[in-house]
Image (cartoon, rainbow over all chains, first blue to last red; front, side, top):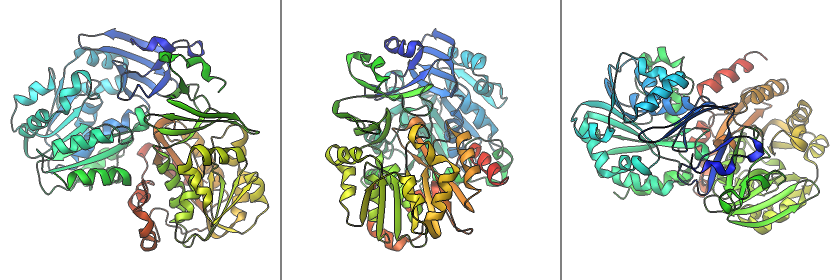
Length: 300
Length: 300
């Protein structure tokens, strides 16, 4: 929390000031720390967990909020069920990152998913999530899941033609996560996927980072024949909006209409955010965003 | 900016800390002030306009961000075109509040709208918007518009059976705006509307204020036979999400499908956010929200 000391005495109380995200030189969320649960320096990063009256329990890595009890449902359910309900038969799933356990929790719920592999580099995030954020940490208890503490990119490079869906639940493109936004990574994902495979990756906010998203589209369309940006609402993220880059090896994929509705029905009633209608609406973008992305897609 | 001094030297630069909204005791957006344009105490409120690198020009009333150049399109276009494209023939429109001019700018664009009346209590907001926020202030130059500097509630009480659409562009339910969230106000709106008339009112965030929204639904369904909550994304508002309460005097209104698409076509290409598809998707709510609102609607 190197930079957070500056605002500590704001109202004579402890406030977390989010200095670890893109654009934090221009705007920052500040959240009152009701109770600090743990703060620890791991081999890879600073890990902080605290409680806030509105957000509930919050997980912070290197001064960037990763998830909060209030709104993690929208991120975890959407990054999981969007690709799982686009792919015709998502049996084998790979999760890169996602050390809090929330994505593993959702992916394992899907009735068609048989095997889940997860690569998280930092075992201490997993331990802290299990202990202090059990609503997400519970995701690691599923028997469909094999968890490796390993660099995700390395794992992807060493496995070819193995997965139907690969989900990259990474932090912002700064520091160590930068490699997860480069052409080489998307090429490795392409090769790691089976026939008709799909990737879903964190892809920033259209309000603050539209140029970054356009650039990403430009890179990824050199590799995958079909791609789209899907949006979701996350109260604790900068701008309250975040999107996912979804790309398929199939030329004729239908991104907007959720498949598997009959089988999915039995878990749908337990979800907090996702529905087949929300799936479709995630692809309806503001006109200024759609026009800009169309421009990239029409000029490969 | 009574409470904002505390964080002024954050990084030895001026930062605006949003202390004037609901829940600001728990979390706050802080925005770097690139250049202060004006700060003035009017008869009614403190008015601040400044520039930020990401958000562009920002308008703040009593320490609460009202709109920014970056994202005002989503609020202004959605609060205007949602009700205008639900009503079968929106000829006469009343705007309560909206002193920045953004809603008047959008409403006047609609090809079916013939007359617009606006009641804004604070003439100084209008003057500051014209001078410092001309992209919104331009809204006051339309010949369809009659602008009154008057209390909106008083105007509504004194006009019966006059408008097809009434838009309430108000601040949060605290201080003077509190009356705009009470049953008496919605009853007066009902009487001010013509046959099949529709209201559209700012109705807070489902992330932070779901209990407030449920309460509002409970009040309004005692008066209007049809009502719904529509959501939009606004980067500069707390949680990045805000919704509108839309209610109709008609029992059989179709909220979700935008009318007038053929006539609307000619202005659609100039809009930055709204589209008929975005209209429909605004009514697709997270499952935890839909379930809670259904519970209120099914138990009037």
